[in-house]
Length: 142
Image (cartoon, rainbow, N blue to C red; front, side, top):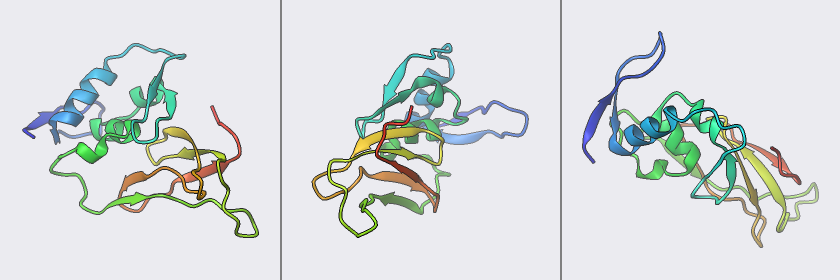
């Protein structure tokens, strides 16, 4: 992908090289008006969350991560130590929680909803470096 310079917004931010995917994603979502009831989908998990969450993120890469498209990012300054994890949810006895609703809160602040599979596994979540992902079990958090 061709590399471009994206001017960041904010007094403490600097210019940074971003790939076309992150640049276009940022240009689309940063210019959206406030839409409290609008939702977007994370394409990796199929879960919906408020578009205002994406609008509030400060970079195109954070936006692509929340939307589930960061795997296609080719930003030069993106950390090389990407983590791609899936979790198996169990009860206190160690039994897998099959077909159970959960909410994952990603490092970007985005919340994605899902249901464990027939083996109690969540969807896959990617992060740049070691970050916490919080899993809430048994409900669909708004």
